[in-house]
Length: 115
Image (cartoon, rainbow, N blue to C red; front, side, top):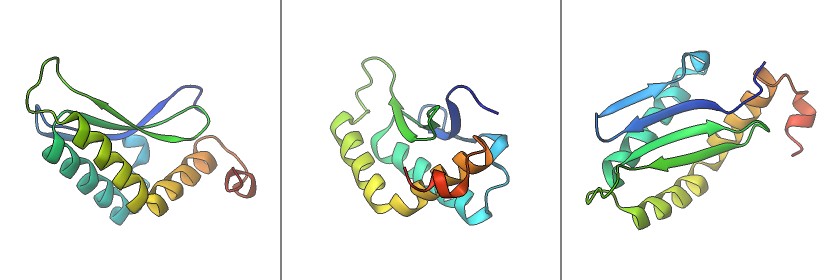
């Protein structure tokens, strides 16, 4: 179904917007809300733009960008907060990877969970 990277969601501190890829509207409401809160709080705390992207292999990655010479963007805080989110939200992130592999990459559920 997908041969390239797929954006799950993202938040932008510059225009104060949140985006959820319409392909993921089928996620449970509490998951969509948790993603929104996580992304919006992240950009509120450190600035810039946060995008959660599925790689071709189904791995969910955090991508962060900022405008050139943005004095409000906290690069060190950004890295620390991503590590914290990856630890605290590991169950959510792993479940999202499983969801993507099964429903978007059409992998067998048993195989998707063993990687």
